[in-house]
Image 1: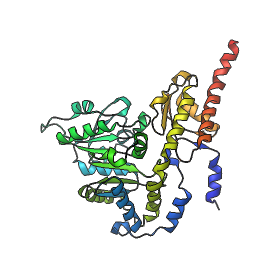
Image 2: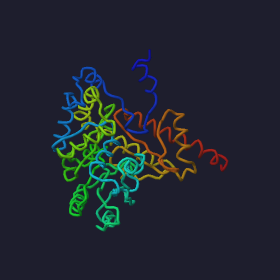
Image 3: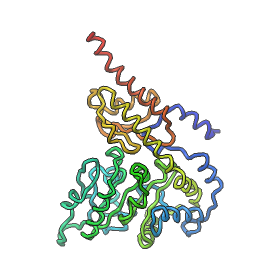
Image 4: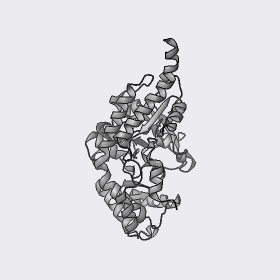
Length: 365
């Protein structure tokens, strides 16, 4: 029989920096899952799911919340709830909703993305305003602005609260709704020293993940008004997201929500430590001052090798990470990687690049 301890042993000697989605539930989470009080959530009768939803709404100072199987489903539900087919959604070019959700806004919600690149992934009103369609009947209409905080593909960048407020105010004045893809909003809150409620107050809806830095095994939350969540509930069922005795999962989510934010600063410190180390390796281009949360994305063009080649060589040294582009690599710190693991990752990178670099250098001497 393949026990959990065997499984942990076989993966323990790997340092997995591919994503903060690889976290394992803590002992406290597993215990809570085993003991969870459950009912049928499709009937609204799972007490643990209900408690998780109430608690999420309370923390975000909203009227209601909904437990959903994944962040991608949460974003899609919000998009479906705020739009009609044929409408447009304004988002940053490298936003998760645009790049990593299988064009579900088009395939399922019938909407088109209207994108623009933004410095550090931070959409300001100056960038959004030119994308808003005039109210002419033969244009598809702008319905929704989606922001992403932290912004994954720009290295976990954080929205300045004043920018979010300005975008929300002006979008609302223009008749648009604002949805926040807050998959890692707790990381942003820790980085800024502000509450998630304060950072998201003016957005019409917020999705956040329990299964990333917060370390729960499965699930995300949508928060918003009572009316929004009622509609979202219908959309969740439409997409096949009714989960029956989901209290088993919600129990881990409750612990993630209450306990995990207290430790996110450690992930950020480890990411900064890693960034400082990598920045000193010849051929790597990276500004450690831009690493504010738990994501480190760096350019390896100067090494003369591709991101995929370097990632493969690191894998042989039991360091897991992934290319985000031909010449860029992403490493994500999380609760299952301690400082020693980060040091190993940096040392392995040094080895991998110096092996290749030292061959021609030796000939030169």
